[in-house]
Length: 495
Image 1 (cartoon, helix red, strand yellow):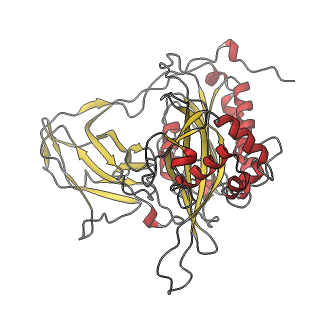
Image 2: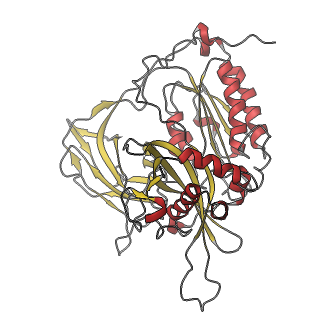
Image 3: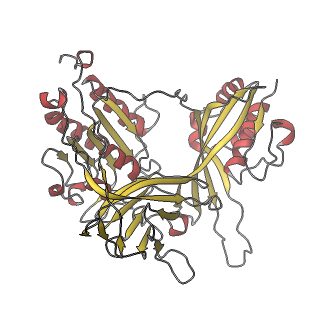
């Protein structure tokens, strides 16, 4: 039985089709979908020459110099299965020294036994598409991109739905956000496949031995960072990325802490859960970016006042955490005071246009007069996201509150980014609804209606100036007690 393949590219015919017959018009290397179809077709036919032609150098090394062993193994895996390409997402864009532009995409390949419609995760692919810039003013058109596969690995099995854990555990989180394509991240030990793997293994081993639940996320953004900092189960968060203060780091603006895409995430550190006890910001000169006075006295902070290597910096931060995370008062569990406020709920919706396929819809932060109201995760074209945010307003009388353009101005910000071209970034389309009548916001725009900002949109309030409604109680942070680490999770005795 030959493998079957269902393409999702709009230019290709949809439906379950024999890969060797019906997809000849979809093969090629001009789109991520096309190069994956070409690779999967070559795997099915055991066509080593074509398979090698669509692999980048790193992928060739992964599958062997001739890629023959990898081809045989993949062909065996895919035999008699139906395949689909799903969730093709733009991850990053960078300009090469040649003047060309490189787009990095991720894609998921799912599979099902022939005759079944129940698909499951099968492979994760990373694809590089390089668009050549016109070499002279005489060129009338831009040549199509050339795409190559950087990685084709087994996908992690999808976990079945689980009920919420009624017994929360103290969590230590590592968030890394490094562009591993940059020089300086090639030195990986032989036991590790990637630089991130090497960072993760030692981190997990250290804190799991102490009995903590360990969460690790690579290529993290400001939504991931805020989620960890604001989680009631977090006792420690380690953030690792480039930073710059005083003097600029490579690709980093002075006074910024950036993620792997170059977006500044430093504003997310301003809001931490009362349960958090240790925070490490591993990045060059991170001390100059973060004002330690803004953090509560109960939070131990580890930052750096010099250039620091990622591995050495993480090791130093882990060593510094011992003074806090080994304390009996932390390990026996605790519950911090849980604040309740009064505020006015508003529903913000973020629509990401399906037509803007080449735009990066990064994680979004929403503020009101310098106070963070909430975050939206990164998304892909076609997504629609909604969040309930709470506004604090001044009372002007019984059940009457002042609503003005200055008090209700909202700022939606993905973070400044001096690295990525602005025409590749989009905040999305934002709308706001309220439970009281007469409220309205408009986006600060140019005469043609386009938002004035690219990485930051300002929403100006132009509704009624007095709200006849009562505020409702809400909690800025979710509140759950942290239990003691049980006997089964006690640390191993020191040798």
